[in-house]
Length: 254
Image 1 (cartoon, rainbow, N blue to C red):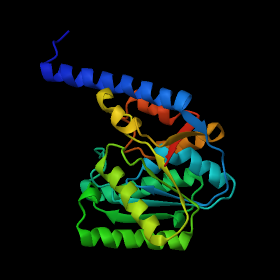
Image 2: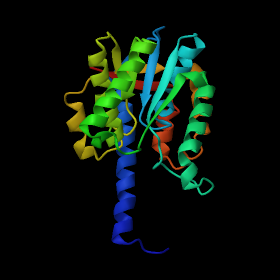
Image 3: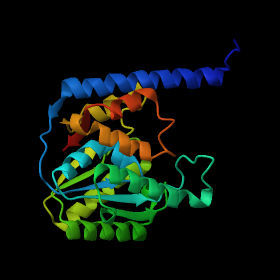
Image 4: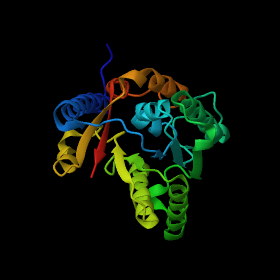
């Protein structure tokens, strides 16, 4: 058996630590710290930084609402150009390919093509927009809110560990404030728990309240939607997949 280099060993051990940490934090939150979240009939918008975040974080909720005929809109903030790129997709076709995947995923969840909107900000740019571009984007988000009139809005967790995800939270929060609308804001975690355990206290000691939504009857739809993202999901960690395929989705409220 070949010996691992020090760097390879560090990477391997780091992955094991993150995997173990993820399992512990996820199950601790789900089983001990979260409260049941009742299904409701409120129209909702899901703001997704990239094509797949909406399904990973909210796919069951989306399918549940759509099964009841409740309007759901999904807004993608970036074009996803720097996500995983399989060999069969040319770089110049990545944006179009990811939009096609998104439409297939949303179709599996019951969302009409007309209710998917792509704002096409450059992937990776949301946390570094100039003041002018940021104000223009927030104005665009305000218009979307005022047109659709949601009662609920779903955004990535404000400490999710990815610059685009965290920026999405703050951009949408600003848009809600500017819209003067009464909208309930719910945060969905993607990468928040995939961190070094030594940093866990930074986002749990003053954490917002955690809630769990039962999606057992819609797991198959979520799995079908995730499968539509062929370019993004094959290399997800095992514990991560186990969590996103579970019978619950987790959300946080201020």
